[in-house]
Image (tube, rainbow, N blue to C red):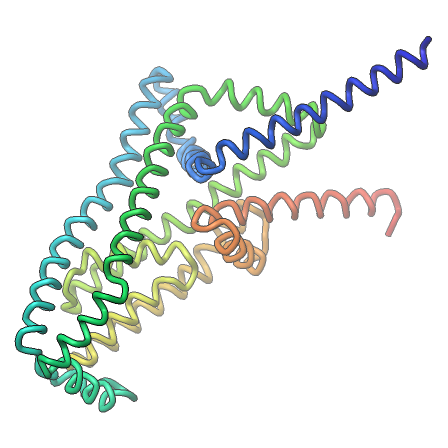
Length: 355
């Protein structure tokens, strides 16, 4: 009788486990297109949780805090996109006029083209053959238009719509995380401890600290680099310094990404004959990026994740390659969990006399 009851209990437990795994798999598959929005909401909530806790200590209600922080982050995320859209529309109108003039009368070779290092003569010859001659210009841009400008515009529109959808659902998920976080966190901790035991609480705490440290080390440092280099672009006389500073801030979230912008700006200054400004911009940008990537970021990220800088760097680029932009923050968090498990396992082996 006892053996029959034990067998029945084991069968029920296996069936329940299979049902849970199947339900989770179906749920993940159903929400697969919204997982990036949920991941971004979790990252933003973790990064801004100290601010939420401070507002709660001041006596603000849960819903009020959720509305306030969601609106604040929405403005921070949306306003730069609106600025970029207006700038792109203005530059697009200028580009259309330029292409119309080019197709009608051609454009003579500017003096700075021949001064380009290494390939100036070849660039000037190509310009003269393809852009200075109106017939060659019409043939060139006729091929370009028939070869994919419409397809590119359609693909760009689809990508923009997709990103806007992710942004909307990110803000919605963020609102509910702010409002219902305590209940969700308590339930998640209870289930995790039931499945993996009490040590999972320590791993969860390390994951949160890793995400927050990565946000501070990548986003905040990137914003500072963008502001400082934006001022440098303005002083150097580059056009659109605000747009260049924003591009620098975005690329600076990836280590060694900012040089792509200030090096391009320095090259533009160089071909225009502003040699001193070009050298000064390269020198300032190089020093700023060197200090940020080799001193500030390792302290902010490494202290939170307890990872050496080499593993921080690998986890950032590995996460970026595997998960896209959200991988910048997921990579160090995953690596922090793996490193914690490695250290705890090694410590148990040492204390048990296995080594």
